[in-house]
Image (cartoon, rainbow, N blue to C red; front, side, top):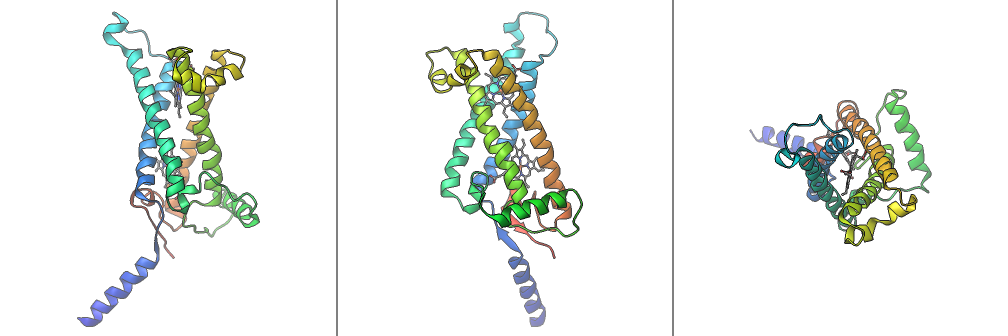
Length: 235
Ligand code: HEM
Ligand code: HEM
């Protein structure tokens, strides 16, 4: 009985060593709220640009376009305030919380590992490397497509929103410079903001593919890590 207990304890310890706490609760909660907000922004943004067929009756009765825009703007606030909260967490959270904001650009090993990860994703190497936080390629892509992308969508989106609210609104005073930067032609800002939808969509497709692929192939946990916070390693 005692031997069995010892074996159980030894097994438990071995399992514990192979698990590292990576993503803290606020970061995980933000990840899933942010994913939901971006999904709603993508769908409603697409419908703003390519509206559904006209519905019979007074527009104010069915309020279809109004509801689509309301969902777009409410999700936009969740997305933007969530992003501010995520920046705050980069200051107070653990060091993995800073990975999508700060790149170790002068570190040659990091660049070397990016090359390795590209080969790994192209099925050119057989052995996966293991990382506690994001792998260097994921980190670079998240910085370029998510961190920069989020700032871009927030600035172009709030510029358009501010224009609707009027040039003396606080939103226009904060973001109106985006419209001035393209010569005061807000149709151009619509087009630039719209283009962001396709960039975001490509990021999300590649990101979800990579998360599922890594979960299956890299012998370390991925999706459950963004749920529980713990990274588990298999031999
Ligand atoms: C990932 C984030 C976002 C995506 C994918 C997205 C997507 C889109 C798309 C595709 C359009 C249609 C553009 C056009 O062809 O005219 C649009 C319109 C718009 N978006 Fe976003 N958007 C995002 C974030 C935001 C944010 C943060 C705001 C800030 C308030 C915002 C405000 C607006 C406004 C005001 C319009 C114009 C609405 C209208 O003309 O009726 N968007 N969005
Ligand atoms: C609109 C959808 C999504 C967006 C914009 C998004 C964005 C992000 C971002 C920015 C991070 C970095 C987290 C940080 O360090 O703060 C991340 C991590 C992660 N996401 Fe997503 N995500 C989305 C959907 C999903 C979905 C649907 C899954 C699951 C299938 C997923 C799985 C993961 C995983 C596993 C990580 C951690 C990867 C690692 O440990 O290296 N994401 N995501």
